[in-house]
Length: 452
Ligand code: NDP
Image 1 (cartoon, rainbow, N blue to C red):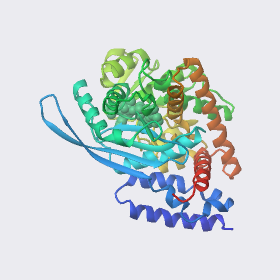
Image 2 (tube, rainbow, N blue to C red):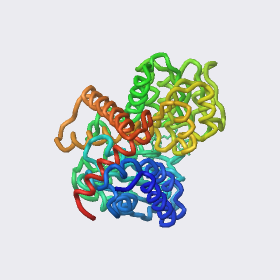
Image 3 (cartoon, protein in one colour):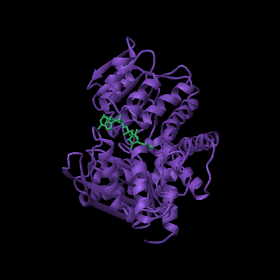
Image 4 (cartoon, rainbow, N blue to C red):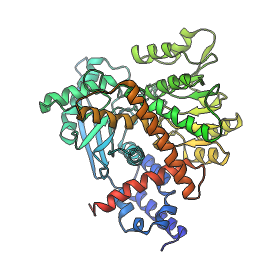
Protein backbone atom coordinates (compact mmCIF):
# COMPACT_ATOMS: atom_id res chain seq x y z
CA UNK A 1 0.00 0.00 0.00
CA UNK A 2 1.52 3.32 -1.04
CA UNK A 3 0.83 6.46 0.98
CA UNK A 4 -0.49 9.69 -0.49
CA UNK A 5 2.90 11.36 -0.15
CA UNK A 6 4.73 8.48 -1.90
CA UNK A 7 2.13 8.63 -4.67
CA UNK A 8 2.57 12.38 -4.94
CA UNK A 9 6.34 11.96 -5.31
CA UNK A 10 5.85 9.36 -8.06
CA UNK A 11 3.43 11.68 -9.89
CA UNK A 12 5.91 14.58 -9.58
CA UNK A 13 8.58 12.42 -11.26
CA UNK A 14 6.18 11.53 -14.01
CA UNK A 15 5.32 15.20 -14.56
CA UNK A 16 9.02 16.02 -14.95
CA UNK A 17 9.31 13.22 -17.49
CA UNK A 18 6.23 14.49 -19.37
CA UNK A 19 7.93 17.89 -19.70
CA UNK A 20 11.11 16.26 -21.08
CA UNK A 21 9.29 13.98 -23.51
CA UNK A 22 7.00 16.76 -24.80
CA UNK A 23 9.24 19.83 -25.10
CA UNK A 24 7.80 23.25 -25.99
CA UNK A 25 4.21 22.26 -25.19
CA UNK A 26 3.44 24.53 -22.18
CA UNK A 27 -0.35 24.22 -22.46
CA UNK A 28 -0.12 20.42 -22.42
CA UNK A 29 2.23 20.54 -19.41
CA UNK A 30 -0.24 22.84 -17.63
CA UNK A 31 -3.18 20.49 -18.30
CA UNK A 32 -1.18 17.42 -17.19
CA UNK A 33 -0.13 19.17 -13.97
CA UNK A 34 -3.69 20.29 -13.29
CA UNK A 35 -5.00 16.70 -13.49
CA UNK A 36 -2.11 14.66 -12.05
CA UNK A 37 -1.63 16.94 -9.05
CA UNK A 38 -5.12 16.00 -7.81
CA UNK A 39 -4.93 12.23 -8.31
CA UNK A 40 -2.72 11.16 -5.37
CA UNK A 41 -5.63 10.44 -2.96
CA UNK A 42 -7.43 8.10 -5.38
CA UNK A 43 -4.26 6.29 -6.47
CA UNK A 44 -3.21 5.81 -2.86
CA UNK A 45 -6.68 4.54 -1.92
CA UNK A 46 -7.06 2.13 -4.84
CA UNK A 47 -3.87 0.09 -5.42
CA UNK A 48 -4.97 -1.10 -8.90
CA UNK A 49 -4.44 2.49 -10.13
CA UNK A 50 -0.78 2.31 -9.11
CA UNK A 51 -0.22 -0.42 -11.71
CA UNK A 52 3.01 0.47 -13.53
CA UNK A 53 2.29 2.11 -16.83
CA UNK A 54 -1.34 3.10 -16.30
CA UNK A 55 -0.77 6.85 -15.88
CA UNK A 56 2.07 6.73 -18.44
CA UNK A 57 -0.41 5.33 -20.99
CA UNK A 58 -3.02 7.91 -20.01
CA UNK A 59 -0.73 10.86 -20.80
CA UNK A 60 0.45 9.46 -24.16
CA UNK A 61 -2.00 9.92 -27.07
CA UNK A 62 -2.99 6.73 -28.86
CA UNK A 63 -2.33 8.46 -32.18
CA UNK A 64 -1.23 11.93 -33.39
CA UNK A 65 -1.72 13.00 -36.99
CA UNK A 66 -0.10 16.14 -38.46
CA UNK A 67 -0.68 17.05 -42.08
CA UNK A 68 -0.22 19.71 -44.76
CA UNK A 69 -3.29 21.78 -45.75
CA UNK A 70 -2.64 23.70 -48.99
CA UNK A 71 -5.39 26.01 -50.29
CA UNK A 72 -5.85 28.94 -52.66
CA UNK A 73 -7.21 32.35 -51.66
CA UNK A 74 -9.54 34.43 -53.84
CA UNK A 75 -6.55 35.99 -55.63
CA UNK A 76 -5.17 32.57 -56.54
CA UNK A 77 -2.30 32.73 -54.01
CA UNK A 78 -1.37 29.41 -52.41
CA UNK A 79 -1.28 29.17 -48.60
CA UNK A 80 0.03 26.23 -46.61
CA UNK A 81 -1.42 25.57 -43.15
CA UNK A 82 -0.86 22.71 -40.75
CA UNK A 83 -3.62 20.33 -39.73
CA UNK A 84 -3.75 18.24 -36.53
CA UNK A 85 -5.82 15.44 -35.07
CA UNK A 86 -4.79 13.99 -31.72
CA UNK A 87 -6.65 10.76 -30.93
CA UNK A 88 -5.94 10.63 -27.23
CA UNK A 89 -7.95 7.86 -25.63
CA UNK A 90 -10.67 5.53 -26.90
CA UNK A 91 -11.21 3.31 -23.84
CA UNK A 92 -14.77 4.60 -23.42
CA UNK A 93 -15.83 5.03 -27.05
CA UNK A 94 -14.83 6.64 -30.37
CA UNK A 95 -12.52 9.65 -30.03
CA UNK A 96 -14.69 12.75 -29.64
CA UNK A 97 -13.69 16.38 -29.54
CA UNK A 98 -13.80 19.54 -31.61
CA UNK A 99 -11.68 21.13 -34.32
CA UNK A 100 -10.14 24.55 -33.62
CA UNK A 101 -9.15 26.95 -36.41
CA UNK A 102 -7.05 29.73 -34.88
CA UNK A 103 -3.60 31.17 -35.58
CA UNK A 104 -2.39 30.06 -32.11
CA UNK A 105 -3.01 26.35 -32.79
CA UNK A 106 0.00 24.02 -32.49
CA UNK A 107 0.52 20.45 -31.33
CA UNK A 108 0.79 21.39 -27.64
CA UNK A 109 -2.51 23.29 -27.70
CA UNK A 110 -4.30 20.39 -29.39
CA UNK A 111 -2.79 17.92 -26.90
CA UNK A 112 -3.93 20.00 -23.92
CA UNK A 113 -7.44 20.14 -25.34
CA UNK A 114 -7.45 16.41 -26.18
CA UNK A 115 -6.20 15.49 -22.70
CA UNK A 116 -8.91 17.58 -21.00
CA UNK A 117 -11.47 16.04 -23.32
CA UNK A 118 -10.79 12.50 -22.02
CA UNK A 119 -11.96 13.39 -18.50
CA UNK A 120 -14.75 15.71 -19.65
CA UNK A 121 -16.24 13.03 -21.88
CA UNK A 122 -15.96 10.46 -19.10
CA UNK A 123 -17.86 12.79 -16.75
CA UNK A 124 -20.85 12.93 -19.11
CA UNK A 125 -21.42 9.21 -18.43
CA UNK A 126 -21.79 8.64 -22.20
CA UNK A 127 -19.72 6.31 -24.42
CA UNK A 128 -17.19 8.72 -25.92
CA UNK A 129 -13.39 8.76 -25.86
CA UNK A 130 -11.21 11.87 -26.04
CA UNK A 131 -9.64 13.61 -29.04
CA UNK A 132 -9.13 17.07 -30.51
CA UNK A 133 -7.91 18.62 -33.73
CA UNK A 134 -7.62 21.77 -35.77
CA UNK A 135 -5.34 24.01 -37.74
CA UNK A 136 -3.36 27.25 -37.49
CA UNK A 137 -5.66 28.61 -40.22
CA UNK A 138 -7.24 31.96 -39.24
CA UNK A 139 -10.77 32.32 -40.67
CA UNK A 140 -11.07 36.01 -39.66
CA UNK A 141 -11.56 38.18 -42.72
CA UNK A 142 -11.67 35.22 -45.13
CA UNK A 143 -14.49 34.97 -47.67
CA UNK A 144 -16.94 32.07 -47.57
CA UNK A 145 -15.29 30.66 -50.71
CA UNK A 146 -11.84 30.74 -49.06
CA UNK A 147 -13.17 29.05 -45.91
CA UNK A 148 -14.82 26.41 -48.10
CA UNK A 149 -11.63 25.68 -50.04
CA UNK A 150 -9.67 25.44 -46.80
CA UNK A 151 -12.22 23.05 -45.22
CA UNK A 152 -12.23 20.89 -48.35
CA UNK A 153 -8.44 20.62 -48.33
CA UNK A 154 -8.41 19.90 -44.58
CA UNK A 155 -10.97 17.10 -44.95
CA UNK A 156 -9.17 15.62 -47.95
CA UNK A 157 -6.57 14.36 -45.48
CA UNK A 158 -8.65 14.10 -42.29
CA UNK A 159 -11.32 11.81 -43.81
CA UNK A 160 -9.06 8.74 -43.71
CA UNK A 161 -8.65 9.03 -39.93
CA UNK A 162 -12.28 9.58 -38.84
CA UNK A 163 -15.60 7.70 -38.92
CA UNK A 164 -18.71 7.27 -36.79
CA UNK A 165 -17.14 4.29 -34.95
CA UNK A 166 -13.60 5.70 -34.91
CA UNK A 167 -13.35 9.42 -34.37
CA UNK A 168 -16.10 12.05 -34.46
CA UNK A 169 -14.96 15.72 -34.66
CA UNK A 170 -17.15 18.77 -33.94
CA UNK A 171 -16.64 22.55 -33.73
CA UNK A 172 -14.53 24.71 -31.41
CA UNK A 173 -12.98 28.18 -31.79
CA UNK A 174 -13.28 29.25 -35.43
CA UNK A 175 -15.34 26.20 -36.40
CA UNK A 176 -19.11 26.68 -36.34
CA UNK A 177 -22.04 25.57 -38.46
CA UNK A 178 -20.61 26.98 -41.71
CA UNK A 179 -17.32 25.09 -41.37
CA UNK A 180 -18.99 21.83 -40.25
CA UNK A 181 -21.17 22.06 -43.38
CA UNK A 182 -18.19 22.37 -45.73
CA UNK A 183 -16.29 19.60 -43.89
CA UNK A 184 -19.28 17.25 -43.98
CA UNK A 185 -19.88 17.92 -47.69
CA UNK A 186 -16.29 17.03 -48.57
CA UNK A 187 -16.36 13.88 -46.39
CA UNK A 188 -19.54 12.74 -48.13
CA UNK A 189 -18.06 13.45 -51.53
CA UNK A 190 -14.80 11.58 -50.93
CA UNK A 191 -16.32 8.54 -49.23
CA UNK A 192 -19.62 8.36 -51.14
CA UNK A 193 -21.34 7.64 -47.81
CA UNK A 194 -24.12 9.40 -45.93
CA UNK A 195 -22.48 8.87 -42.57
CA UNK A 196 -24.26 11.43 -40.42
CA UNK A 197 -22.51 10.33 -37.22
CA UNK A 198 -19.03 11.24 -38.48
CA UNK A 199 -19.31 14.91 -37.43
CA UNK A 200 -21.50 16.70 -34.89
CA UNK A 201 -22.73 20.26 -34.86
CA UNK A 202 -24.40 19.68 -38.24
CA UNK A 203 -27.24 21.89 -39.49
CA UNK A 204 -30.88 21.28 -38.70
CA UNK A 205 -32.40 19.29 -41.51
CA UNK A 206 -29.27 17.32 -42.40
CA UNK A 207 -28.52 15.40 -39.23
CA UNK A 208 -27.95 18.13 -36.64
CA UNK A 209 -29.49 18.04 -33.18
CA UNK A 210 -31.70 20.77 -31.81
CA UNK A 211 -30.01 22.54 -28.85
CA UNK A 212 -26.47 21.56 -29.99
CA UNK A 213 -25.51 25.19 -30.76
CA UNK A 214 -26.85 26.26 -27.36
CA UNK A 215 -25.57 23.28 -25.37
CA UNK A 216 -22.16 24.43 -24.09
CA UNK A 217 -23.35 27.85 -22.91
CA UNK A 218 -26.64 26.55 -21.51
CA UNK A 219 -24.81 23.71 -19.78
CA UNK A 220 -22.31 26.04 -18.16
CA UNK A 221 -25.06 28.22 -16.74
CA UNK A 222 -26.84 25.10 -15.42
CA UNK A 223 -23.59 24.07 -13.74
CA UNK A 224 -23.16 27.56 -12.23
CA UNK A 225 -26.77 27.43 -11.00
CA UNK A 226 -26.08 24.07 -9.33
CA UNK A 227 -23.00 25.48 -7.58
CA UNK A 228 -25.05 28.47 -6.39
CA UNK A 229 -27.79 26.13 -5.09
CA UNK A 230 -25.14 24.36 -3.05
CA UNK A 231 -24.47 27.75 -1.37
CA UNK A 232 -28.19 28.29 -0.78
CA UNK A 233 -28.59 30.83 -3.60
CA UNK A 234 -29.87 30.94 -7.16
CA UNK A 235 -29.11 32.99 -10.28
CA UNK A 236 -32.15 35.25 -10.04
CA UNK A 237 -31.06 38.90 -9.92
CA UNK A 238 -27.31 38.11 -10.08
CA UNK A 239 -25.00 40.19 -12.26
CA UNK A 240 -22.67 38.21 -14.52
CA UNK A 241 -19.51 38.98 -16.46
CA UNK A 242 -19.01 36.86 -19.58
CA UNK A 243 -15.94 36.93 -21.83
CA UNK A 244 -15.96 36.06 -25.53
CA UNK A 245 -18.71 36.65 -28.05
CA UNK A 246 -18.73 33.40 -29.96
CA UNK A 247 -20.85 30.28 -29.68
CA UNK A 248 -20.28 29.60 -25.98
CA UNK A 249 -20.57 33.22 -24.84
CA UNK A 250 -23.76 33.95 -26.78
CA UNK A 251 -25.70 30.99 -25.40
CA UNK A 252 -24.30 31.58 -21.92
CA UNK A 253 -25.78 35.08 -22.01
CA UNK A 254 -29.08 33.68 -23.35
CA UNK A 255 -29.45 31.10 -20.57
CA UNK A 256 -28.42 33.59 -17.87
CA UNK A 257 -31.28 35.83 -18.98
CA UNK A 258 -33.69 32.87 -18.97
CA UNK A 259 -32.78 32.16 -15.33
CA UNK A 260 -33.16 35.80 -14.26
CA UNK A 261 -29.50 36.83 -14.18
CA UNK A 262 -28.08 39.80 -16.08
CA UNK A 263 -24.93 39.48 -18.22
CA UNK A 264 -23.35 42.92 -18.58
CA UNK A 265 -20.26 42.13 -20.70
CA UNK A 266 -18.95 40.34 -23.76
CA UNK A 267 -15.58 40.56 -25.52
CA UNK A 268 -13.38 39.50 -28.40
CA UNK A 269 -9.66 39.76 -29.03
CA UNK A 270 -9.99 43.54 -29.66
CA UNK A 271 -11.45 44.40 -26.22
CA UNK A 272 -14.70 44.26 -24.29
CA UNK A 273 -18.13 45.82 -24.11
CA UNK A 274 -19.88 46.69 -20.86
CA UNK A 275 -23.60 47.35 -21.08
CA UNK A 276 -25.28 48.62 -17.90
CA UNK A 277 -28.71 47.52 -19.13
CA UNK A 278 -27.50 44.02 -19.87
CA UNK A 279 -26.31 42.63 -23.21
CA UNK A 280 -28.93 42.88 -25.97
CA UNK A 281 -28.70 39.40 -27.41
CA UNK A 282 -30.49 40.10 -30.69
CA UNK A 283 -27.98 42.84 -31.48
CA UNK A 284 -24.99 40.70 -30.45
CA UNK A 285 -26.19 37.74 -32.54
CA UNK A 286 -26.77 40.02 -35.55
CA UNK A 287 -23.22 41.42 -35.31
CA UNK A 288 -21.42 38.16 -34.48
CA UNK A 289 -23.42 35.40 -36.16
CA UNK A 290 -24.79 37.23 -39.22
CA UNK A 291 -22.29 40.02 -39.99
CA UNK A 292 -19.22 38.27 -38.46
CA UNK A 293 -18.23 41.69 -37.08
CA UNK A 294 -16.32 42.89 -33.97
CA UNK A 295 -17.76 43.78 -30.54
CA UNK A 296 -17.01 47.51 -30.85
CA UNK A 297 -19.85 47.61 -33.43
CA UNK A 298 -22.18 46.53 -30.60
CA UNK A 299 -21.27 49.58 -28.50
CA UNK A 300 -21.61 51.88 -31.54
CA UNK A 301 -25.14 50.66 -32.25
CA UNK A 302 -26.49 50.05 -28.73
CA UNK A 303 -26.61 53.63 -27.50
CA UNK A 304 -25.75 55.26 -24.16
CA UNK A 305 -25.91 52.17 -21.92
CA UNK A 306 -22.92 50.47 -23.59
CA UNK A 307 -19.27 51.35 -24.02
CA UNK A 308 -16.34 49.59 -25.68
CA UNK A 309 -13.05 49.26 -23.77
CA UNK A 310 -10.25 48.54 -26.26
CA UNK A 311 -7.79 45.92 -25.06
CA UNK A 312 -9.49 45.73 -21.63
CA UNK A 313 -10.52 42.70 -19.59
CA UNK A 314 -14.10 41.97 -18.54
CA UNK A 315 -12.92 40.86 -15.08
CA UNK A 316 -12.57 44.53 -14.09
CA UNK A 317 -16.38 44.89 -14.13
CA UNK A 318 -17.92 44.11 -10.69
CA UNK A 319 -20.18 41.02 -10.73
CA UNK A 320 -21.62 38.17 -8.65
CA UNK A 321 -20.60 35.46 -11.08
CA UNK A 322 -17.99 35.18 -13.84
CA UNK A 323 -18.19 32.89 -16.86
CA UNK A 324 -14.97 32.93 -18.94
CA UNK A 325 -16.03 31.77 -22.43
CA UNK A 326 -13.24 32.79 -24.84
CA UNK A 327 -9.93 30.93 -24.58
CA UNK A 328 -7.21 29.39 -22.39
CA UNK A 329 -5.38 31.45 -19.74
CA UNK A 330 -7.60 34.51 -20.18
CA UNK A 331 -8.17 34.93 -16.42
CA UNK A 332 -4.94 35.33 -14.46
CA UNK A 333 -3.98 35.86 -10.82
CA UNK A 334 -4.47 39.64 -10.96
CA UNK A 335 -7.90 39.15 -12.55
CA UNK A 336 -8.82 36.69 -9.79
CA UNK A 337 -7.77 39.27 -7.17
CA UNK A 338 -10.01 41.85 -8.84
CA UNK A 339 -12.96 39.46 -8.99
CA UNK A 340 -12.54 38.54 -5.30
CA UNK A 341 -12.22 42.19 -4.29
CA UNK A 342 -15.48 42.89 -6.13
CA UNK A 343 -17.26 40.09 -4.23
CA UNK A 344 -17.59 37.38 -6.89
CA UNK A 345 -19.39 34.25 -5.59
CA UNK A 346 -18.88 31.76 -8.41
CA UNK A 347 -16.63 31.33 -11.46
CA UNK A 348 -17.66 28.70 -14.01
CA UNK A 349 -15.46 27.89 -17.02
CA UNK A 350 -17.27 27.87 -20.39
CA UNK A 351 -13.93 27.91 -22.20
CA UNK A 352 -11.25 25.25 -21.78
CA UNK A 353 -8.66 26.10 -19.09
CA UNK A 354 -9.42 29.87 -19.15
CA UNK A 355 -8.23 30.39 -15.57
CA UNK A 356 -4.51 30.02 -14.86
CA UNK A 357 -3.49 27.64 -12.01
CA UNK A 358 -2.60 30.64 -9.82
CA UNK A 359 -6.04 32.18 -10.41
CA UNK A 360 -7.81 28.90 -9.57
CA UNK A 361 -5.82 28.60 -6.37
CA UNK A 362 -6.68 32.16 -5.29
CA UNK A 363 -10.38 31.78 -6.06
CA UNK A 364 -10.67 28.50 -4.17
CA UNK A 365 -8.74 29.91 -1.22
CA UNK A 366 -11.14 32.84 -1.07
CA UNK A 367 -14.13 30.48 -0.91
CA UNK A 368 -15.40 31.26 -4.41
CA UNK A 369 -17.27 28.31 -5.99
CA UNK A 370 -15.08 27.32 -8.96
CA UNK A 371 -16.41 25.10 -11.79
CA UNK A 372 -13.59 23.69 -13.96
CA UNK A 373 -14.19 23.53 -17.72
CA UNK A 374 -14.03 19.78 -17.95
CA UNK A 375 -17.19 19.64 -15.83
CA UNK A 376 -18.85 23.00 -16.46
CA UNK A 377 -18.59 23.07 -20.27
CA UNK A 378 -19.29 19.36 -20.83
CA UNK A 379 -22.83 20.13 -22.05
CA UNK A 380 -21.58 20.71 -25.61
CA UNK A 381 -19.95 17.34 -26.04
CA UNK A 382 -22.82 15.67 -24.19
CA UNK A 383 -25.34 16.96 -26.72
CA UNK A 384 -22.91 16.00 -29.50
CA UNK A 385 -23.15 12.43 -28.17
CA UNK A 386 -26.96 12.78 -28.21
CA UNK A 387 -26.66 13.96 -31.84
CA UNK A 388 -24.73 10.75 -32.60
CA UNK A 389 -27.46 8.70 -30.91
CA UNK A 390 -30.14 10.41 -33.01
CA UNK A 391 -28.09 9.87 -36.20
CA UNK A 392 -27.66 6.20 -35.36
CA UNK A 393 -31.40 5.75 -34.87
CA UNK A 394 -32.16 7.94 -37.92
CA UNK A 395 -34.46 10.10 -35.86
CA UNK A 396 -34.52 13.55 -34.33
CA UNK A 397 -35.66 14.57 -30.90
CA UNK A 398 -37.60 17.68 -29.91
CA UNK A 399 -35.75 20.64 -28.42
CA UNK A 400 -37.57 20.04 -25.14
CA UNK A 401 -36.33 16.45 -24.96
CA UNK A 402 -32.71 17.39 -25.72
CA UNK A 403 -32.77 20.22 -23.19
CA UNK A 404 -34.23 17.94 -20.53
CA UNK A 405 -31.43 15.42 -21.15
CA UNK A 406 -28.86 18.23 -21.02
CA UNK A 407 -30.25 19.45 -17.70
CA UNK A 408 -30.07 15.93 -16.22
CA UNK A 409 -26.53 15.43 -17.46
CA UNK A 410 -25.28 18.78 -16.05
CA UNK A 411 -26.93 18.16 -12.68
CA UNK A 412 -25.46 14.64 -12.59
CA UNK A 413 -21.99 15.98 -13.39
CA UNK A 414 -22.34 18.54 -10.61
CA UNK A 415 -23.45 15.88 -8.11
CA UNK A 416 -20.66 13.50 -9.18
CA UNK A 417 -17.97 16.17 -8.80
CA UNK A 418 -19.37 17.36 -5.49
CA UNK A 419 -19.67 13.88 -3.97
CA UNK A 420 -16.31 12.71 -5.28
CA UNK A 421 -14.59 15.76 -3.76
CA UNK A 422 -16.21 14.99 -0.38
CA UNK A 423 -15.20 11.31 -0.62
CA UNK A 424 -11.56 12.34 -1.08
CA UNK A 425 -11.45 14.93 1.72
CA UNK A 426 -11.74 17.96 -0.53
CA UNK A 427 -15.27 19.29 0.14
CA UNK A 428 -16.34 22.01 -2.29
CA UNK A 429 -13.29 21.43 -4.53
CA UNK A 430 -14.86 20.78 -7.95
CA UNK A 431 -11.43 20.56 -9.62
CA UNK A 432 -10.42 17.56 -7.55
CA UNK A 433 -13.91 16.06 -7.82
CA UNK A 434 -14.00 16.37 -11.63
CA UNK A 435 -10.48 15.03 -12.13
CA UNK A 436 -10.91 12.02 -9.87
CA UNK A 437 -14.40 11.09 -11.09
CA UNK A 438 -13.34 11.34 -14.76
CA UNK A 439 -10.11 9.46 -14.06
CA UNK A 440 -11.86 6.58 -12.26
CA UNK A 441 -14.15 5.89 -15.20
CA UNK A 442 -11.37 5.98 -17.82
CA UNK A 443 -8.83 4.11 -15.69
CA UNK A 444 -11.30 1.30 -14.92
CA UNK A 445 -11.95 0.82 -18.65
CA UNK A 446 -8.23 0.92 -19.48
CA UNK A 447 -7.40 -1.66 -16.82
CA UNK A 448 -10.20 -3.97 -18.00
CA UNK A 449 -9.01 -3.74 -21.62
CA UNK A 450 -5.39 -4.69 -20.96
CA UNK A 451 -2.08 -3.10 -21.88
CA UNK A 452 -2.76 -1.56 -25.29
P1 NDP B 1 -15.90 30.87 -31.12
O1 NDP B 1 -14.89 30.84 -32.21
O2 NDP B 1 -17.34 30.80 -31.47
O3 NDP B 1 -15.69 32.17 -30.20
C1 NDP B 1 -14.47 32.40 -29.56
C2 NDP B 1 -14.54 33.74 -28.88
O4 NDP B 1 -13.41 33.89 -28.05
C3 NDP B 1 -14.52 34.90 -29.85
O5 NDP B 1 -15.22 35.98 -29.30
C4 NDP B 1 -13.04 35.20 -29.95
O6 NDP B 1 -12.74 36.53 -30.33
C5 NDP B 1 -12.60 34.97 -28.53
N1 NDP B 1 -11.19 34.57 -28.52
C6 NDP B 1 -10.65 33.46 -29.07
N2 NDP B 1 -9.32 33.44 -28.90
C7 NDP B 1 -9.03 34.56 -28.23
C8 NDP B 1 -7.83 35.13 -27.74
N3 NDP B 1 -6.65 34.51 -27.94
N4 NDP B 1 -7.91 36.29 -27.07
C9 NDP B 1 -9.09 36.92 -26.87
N5 NDP B 1 -10.27 36.44 -27.32
C10 NDP B 1 -10.23 35.29 -27.98
O7 NDP B 1 -15.50 29.65 -30.14
P2 NDP B 1 -16.37 28.92 -29.04
O8 NDP B 1 -17.33 29.89 -28.42
O9 NDP B 1 -16.88 27.68 -29.65
O10 NDP B 1 -15.27 28.49 -27.97
C11 NDP B 1 -14.90 29.31 -26.85
C12 NDP B 1 -14.22 28.46 -25.80
O11 NDP B 1 -15.12 27.43 -25.36
C13 NDP B 1 -12.95 27.72 -26.25
O12 NDP B 1 -12.06 27.63 -25.16
C14 NDP B 1 -13.47 26.32 -26.59
O13 NDP B 1 -12.46 25.34 -26.51
C15 NDP B 1 -14.49 26.15 -25.47
N6 NDP B 1 -15.51 25.14 -25.72
C16 NDP B 1 -16.32 25.21 -26.82
C17 NDP B 1 -17.29 24.25 -27.01
C18 NDP B 1 -18.27 24.35 -28.13
O14 NDP B 1 -19.23 23.55 -28.12
N7 NDP B 1 -18.13 25.25 -29.08
C19 NDP B 1 -17.42 23.09 -26.11
C20 NDP B 1 -16.58 23.18 -24.93
C21 NDP B 1 -15.65 24.16 -24.77
P3 NDP B 1 -12.07 36.82 -31.78
O15 NDP B 1 -13.20 36.60 -32.76
O16 NDP B 1 -11.60 38.21 -31.71
O17 NDP B 1 -10.97 35.81 -31.97
